[in-house]
Image 1 (tube, rainbow over the protein chains, first blue to last red):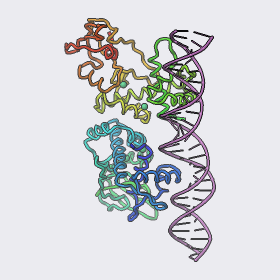
Image 2 (cartoon, chains in turn brown, green, cyan, red; image 1 turned 60 degrees about the vertical axis):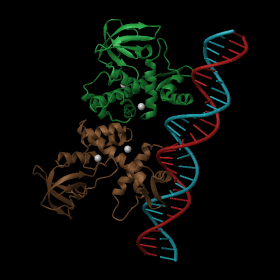
Image 3 (cartoon, rainbow over the protein chains, first blue to last red; image 1 turned 30 degrees about the horizontal axis):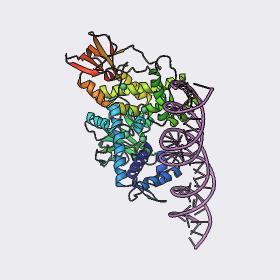
Image 4 (cartoon, rainbow over the protein chains, first blue to last red; image 1 turned 135 degrees about the vertical axis):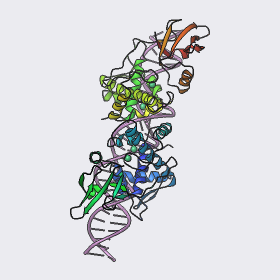
Length: 222
Length: 222
DNA sequence: TCGTCAATTTTGATTAATCAAAATTACACC
DNA sequence: GGTGTAATTTTGATTAATCAAAATTGACGA
Ligand SMILES: [Mn+2]
Ligand SMILES: [Mn+2]
Ligand SMILES: [Mn+2]
Ligand SMILES: [Mn+2]
């Protein structure tokens, strides 16, 4: 009756996948799900049918999958654990923000509710993890902030980095080494479509240029 | 190639089982192993044959099982993790010593080497866990202390509690509430075979009586 | 309208871990 | 030395999770 790590990973992937859906879409395609989980497409289909059987998802063959209320609750719980654990490993244990993801990926499935509560308390009921990702509340709500990317925020205006949407360790180290972690204030000076780049001023006043691909992964508040 | 949680649990159970063997015995009986893991005897037989195939154990049908050097190394690693995690949860996270076992039982299989090293460092390379159980060293040695139980230690002589060999939460709470945790100094005042009991003086001077069963679970140093 | 093709599903297998219950074995006792 | 019993092993099945490759579907462009 209690969900396996595998089931938890599927639900979490669907949950996150839903937040990435463009505009009107309501279903996460099976291919995207399989890709996110690193499994064969056929495996995802089989598993999703089983999840539908347990009323954790709604499944429309050939269209995709969506969480039910029950599925959402479980998924939010796992995501909450993941992000609390990441923050705990950084703040309390002193690990680096680029090395906590894999541990959190495993620990999210096994730590007790008592330990999670203890962690949440130690951290002072935090709202975001080390990457600026919002932490679902204990009752399953995912706080939503409207953020802009470096591609859409106003030019020549100080903005604060709020979130980095790429868990890749090399990318995170790059961000850190250039003082672009969440909390830092920066300013976009120019964008150029032709050169596919964004020029900005880092907190220390240093100028630097990012490709648009990378720039789109930095979310900021005005 | 990397051992599953299940394999790690088998190896750890055999490892601990070996330390409980009376004098000349060298093999852990299958029944004892199955009992320790809470699985059916036939399951243990099947699994142990697979472990033998991987050269992690030596298996003598109808006699029992023993770890090879390779098996010992893996088992010591898991036990080290378990005990470091328990101590970490008590010392750093502030959990109680009677509630950390189950979390450690799961986390021992999933946390990264980097996290374990960080924990070991934070704790100052500890030698024993919250229950006084010795922590295997990073190179797989299990430090051995010769301890006596409350049934064998000298009478009317101050002794220090060094280890409590029962993970049961109710028992641990009892020990704690009577100030008998490792580190406390106590004195055995009398033993009586007929009444099956041991009378002792707790640190605060309070007199109390334990049954021999319970008394045998408290290990002390002179 | 139709064909193509990418996405998806189905099929057939495999691996790991487990159980219940039947069969076997060892050994201790008479 | 036989025999009974407890421990152990074997047998036959089940469940969860996965893959590769074949089959199917559906949407879009010609
Ligand atoms: Mn996970
Ligand atoms: Mn994160
Ligand atoms: Mn374990
Ligand atoms: Mn312990």
